[in-house]
Length: 167
Image (cartoon, rainbow, N blue to C red; front, side, top):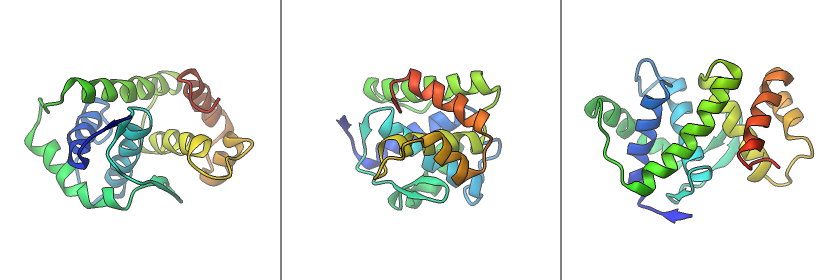
């Protein structure tokens, strides 16, 4: 895992939000915006392999980092002030591409990638790897916790497995 300054996660989160079209309107106070920032932050560390020192815990909406909540305003500023070109180095770009490829694969399988699906992806990955004890059936666990259809969660699970997660 590549260790970086915590503030470097912010341009990466902003770029992923923009590139994946995860926030139509960038309202830093909306719950959807906060969920997107949290889940993208988790995925950048977990899938992207960048260590920003963010600690995530399981809450009702899945992975949550108390320290990341302090950066909603700054992510919003990146989205507002850097409309097209957010500068990233090669390591950051590579990490971002890993996350983006996973989420694009989910979008392709489901035909959609919205806040609820993003939350399900991050939550499933956390259930498979970052909670103790790891549930025997993470798909069923997520269906119970989130009230999503088993069909949708299974599709997400299959994509995640293809990426070597939740094996």
